[in-house]
Amino acid sequence: MIKKLLKILTSLFLAGCSMVGARTSEEAPFTVLLENGDIQIRQYQELLVAETVIDADYANSGSIGFNRLAGYIFGKNISQDKIAMTSPVFREQDSEKIAMTAPVLQQQTGAKWIMSFVMPADYTLSTLPKPIDPLVSIKQIPGKKVAVLKYSGSINEQMIAEKTNVLTAWLVQNHYQILSKARSAAFDPPWTIPSLRRNEVHIDVE
Image (cartoon, rainbow, N blue to C red; front, side):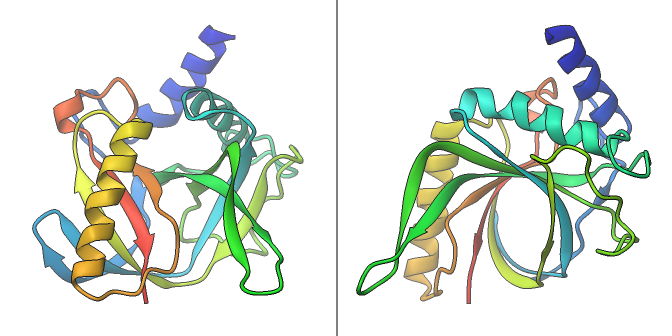
């Protein structure tokens, strides 16, 4: 199982990434609206993503999610097409809306994470092959404004929480309306030298 996973991860990333952070894979397109040090406000275009929900903690959700989504882009779809990898890989904690008299609250469901692969820009919802795995779904994400904090080094649950707090504090201080919970964006495989990794935290804003 471990050898199979390593083979998938290696095949997935070597086309566009390396140990030294060199990247040649396509990146989801955006326009920078504002830049302040490591923080940017970006306008993203509409995106197509392949997504899966993983019922596991953060440490285990990475390998489970990668297996499912890598299987889809390597041909586990009704057309048996191979789909090019596009960066970044998104991961966020799942949540559910619980209806109440007022208001509607959003609550963490616990150990569930959502992982998404961005699909190449030349696909549309009608041309992208449908997944065979019922745990993989295709979603169209509308264009939106996103606050981003860039950082290098290790990517883990604690680091994501720390960077989320930094970005949230900056947004509050600068009077941005926050529209989403934070999500992690990874651009490099785990074996990339930590100091050369590109990691980001994303939060949707008004």
